[in-house]
Image (cartoon, rainbow, N blue to C red; front, side, top):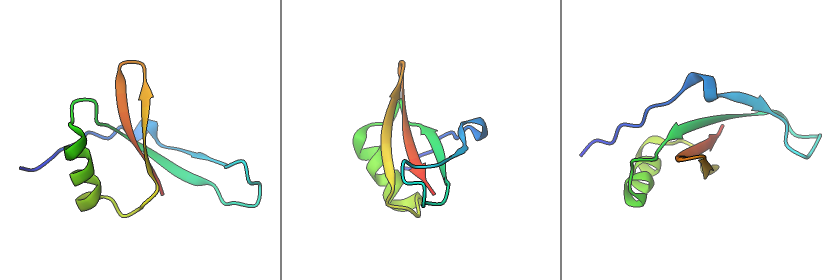
Amino acid sequence: MALIAATDRHDRHDRYDADPGREPTERRRIDVTDMHAAGIEEYVASNVDTDAVSLEHRGARTFLVLEE
């Protein structure tokens, strides 16, 4: 079963971490509200090239956050 997650280009932005010596990182948010935890894990394992991932809850939505 193929998992499809919509991405919103407007959710991308650059930011600086608390460490001023670090380069800016790009964060991408993928809406995973309707996915089960196992589906999110499978999606990350097969489609994401970074280990810097987290989940973020905004209102009634849940986003997978990828730091690239």
